[in-house]
Image (cartoon, rainbow, N blue to C red; front, side):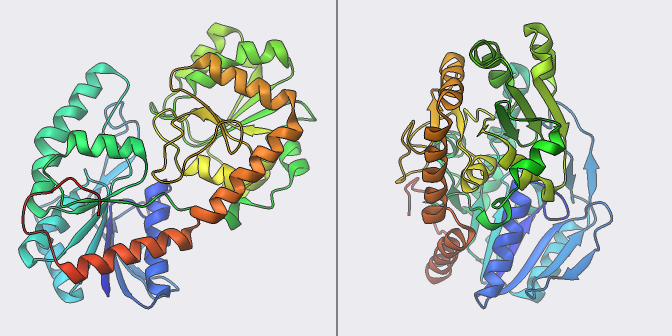
Length: 405
């Protein structure tokens, strides 16, 4: 197959969808397929390059929108300009894709390549990584309007098959984009266990200036959807049971309300925010933690799966049916409280510290789940099967059924 991978986010830009699209593009090429990546320019990355696997990457001129609360404080590059339609058409006409794999439902490159797909009758697969939601009511209404009046009409033009990564995303897609897609397919987030495993606990503790006290490691950028408020609010109860506990937040802080809340609760001394760190430091840091927690009450994402891959027990908010067909068990594979249950979060953190041997067993079972279901190779194979099916059956010819394929 000739597969065009389209994502405004691509390395060197960091982020979950960026790394996944990169890994999938390389995996497609290793499987013998011809791959073109179309992305937005980012910092000083070259306008065009060829990766070691033979993947051609083209970065189109783009502008960066300012960080803001509306943009969930992320740096987002958009490639929209009068020449975009012509540039996309020229690139894809030259490449002649059999199928287009898009990432991100609200990006201009998705819309431009979707328009092209509809005109050329080429099937498309869309991976939705982020929900247009915000905990602040005003911004939430704005995002709802964007979904209704901007995103949905554009998806209707090319009716992509949409990848559903978890149960929360399924609920969101069927609620927000009804009638705008061909069908749905369940493919979980994929992770590479190798890079996160083998960290040195002693070196990680030395990096933090800590000895043997209980450590809650919290990995991932701090954004409104991953604001760390719940774990900070759980700290007073945890500290009463285990007074030396430290919460280590690792990731760029786009949303710092958790720091203000820590001051209000008098637990600032127990919170260490490292900010963004080099990826090479993460294995030692995750090994330094007794538990990982960033209370993903709206879905278990890449950082959670990577922590599980490292064998670190995870405590959080979530649904035990988060991954369709792969049930989780509280206290066996993971420690999960119901979303909004801060007391449940603190109780599970205390449970970990009360019995670290049992917690390590939970971490090992979580690691086994990742090995069996969530490795990048397994996920890449699922994507390839899905793309082959799309090529075999062609583009959508009518309205979406809303059913899973």
